[in-house]
Amino acid sequence: MSVYDQADPHRFKRRGLLFVLSSPSGAGKSTIARKLLADEPDLYMSVSATTRSIRPGEQDGKDYRFVGLETFRDMVANHEFLEWAHVFGERYGTPKAPVDAMLKSGHDVLFDIDWQGAQQLHQIAGGDVVRVFILPPSMEELHERLKRRATDSEEIIDRRMARAANEISHWDGYDYVLVNDDVEDCFAKVKTILAAERLKRSRQTGLIGFIRGLTR
Image 1 (cartoon, one colour):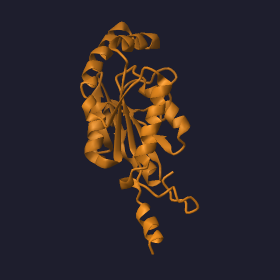
Image 2 (spheres, rainbow, N blue to C red):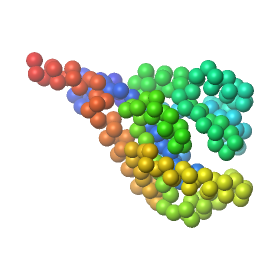
Image 3 (cartoon, rainbow, N blue to C red):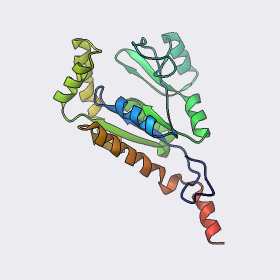
Image 4 (spheres, rainbow, N blue to C red):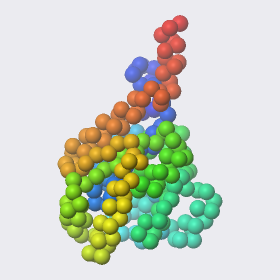
């Protein structure tokens, strides 16, 4: 929680985090994101807008905000996105207003976006962005995971594998890089990163007042 509790001297008012998880499709970022949201009550998911069609089991406004191409173009023209990108012939973007509202209410925001989005977000928000890239243990295992998921044709899987190599080449644009060969172990490491970043002195805006009170 980012609101200072005077009864607890370990919890200072702090700036919110923009916590980015990226990975090639099938490497596990969505699974880890769901586990993180379930385990961290002060972390809220940023819901991206997309021009792609809704898939079975998805909910508009929860998984994505599904919009038409013209609506998306209008949002770009009106500077309503923090970041946006072309992915597999469709467009994805992060609306600014909901993210600003979550930060103002004292919450951290989780982003499930690709390297292009992470780069744009870092250019805009700088030090408030924490970027984590998740790697598969091997390309063979990544291919098997995509096949087991059984949501894409072989053609789409081949396209995802080709794109994965390009995405992995941008690993050095991230603050942390993890290998997801065990989802529980990888999840524990992501939680550790989030906890450590929340405790950074540069984000503890309430720390100065507390120290002044100690030294009066």
